[in-house]
Image 1: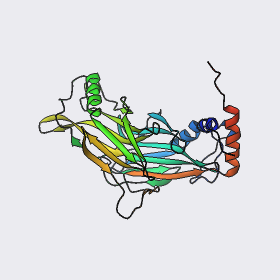
Image 2: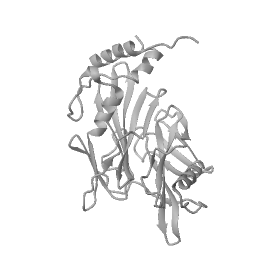
Image 3: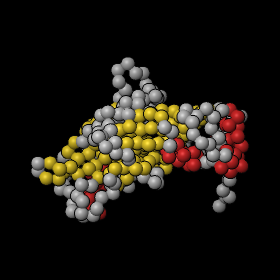
Length: 302
């Protein structure tokens, strides 16, 4: 029997025990599990450090910077977190659920480096990601104003710069989705009021839901002419991506030659990392459906 739309919506709100975890972790009792608790548990199992001489350990920002859903594509739901060094974001990552059929659902992990040096990431004690190259390629924002002296004014400047960008994605099924900018940044660098070396991460999300597809990072960088605004785009999707600045394409991600469409298991040495972690059994999916029925309520007619 097909799951109804109501049950599919409820599916994004509840979760049961996992089986066959890619990496061994302590399991919470199935009666206590929710989507959020399982995703948070998987995020908490990460340790990420800079590949610098000091092996600086990055700090996980305690709260997710975004909670998103994709009701159109695979009933996905996810959480996005950042890892920081001295208040500045150096890695961003998300854990999300993928639902493909009544008997197939699993969690996936997605990361992108925001660091100027390599990273080393371990999940439940195992090496899963170690990019060597810098995570971002910054370029000057043409005709940008001088960075404002006050922190609120700099945020306004970043928002105005971000609003000049537009984008779209092309999925593996050749479906096109227009991307829209979230006006509130996912993360604002934790800098002092008078520290002009500011920055923020903005996201461009899919019209299929609120899943971030492209990240836009703005930072103030010292130059020979003084502090200037710079920006970088980062892939946060398995789709083909196209970014425009005032109707002129300035960045894209397309699959390398020889790769036909979707390459899900992205290499642990790439600055973008994507892999599947846990998959449900048919028995667990049956339990999930039962739990979804019990938790679903239909609003009364007005």
